[in-house]
Image (cartoon, rainbow, N blue to C red; front, side):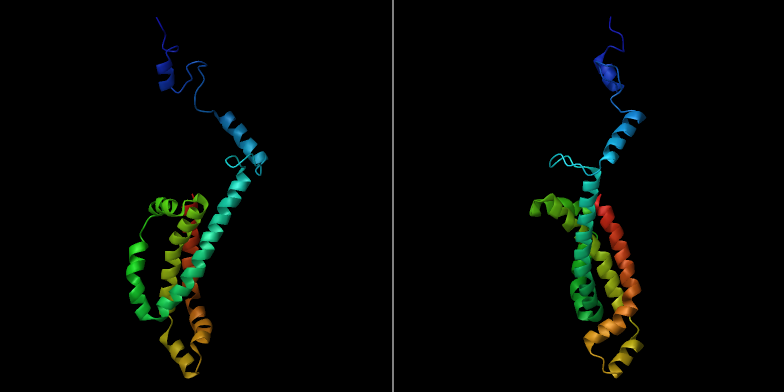
Length: 192
């Protein structure tokens, strides 16, 4: 008669190896030793699928920086355009309202299918998910610029480009920076 300790099915159910009787889950000392090995040499490179934590972290920071930077380059000018032109705001609002609530988890398979490169897909998903808070906050801040300030600028015959940089940008800067701060949080969330 077999005892329960010798039964492989019982051992597997209890998390132990049938041959050694040792648990399949590593203990705290095993975890600490493995973590120390990874932290001791964070920049090792043993092929395409075996890189150190430092290299992996650098890749992640690079993807976040690139996706977020692209979002800044697109969101702030378009947000200015939407905020300064009610017609553009009404024209682009349906697209924004349609694309804004899409989850990063829904964007990733679509990006992988169309782009077919995991690194570029990650950058695209970071970009598209970081875009909306910046765009909306920029448009809100620009549209919320006090009319008195704009009227004074018109009275002084300040051109539209100079007005955008000397009147509207300083007035909208707190709102734009809030959108950028929210977007960087989303970018870090998406990279995970």
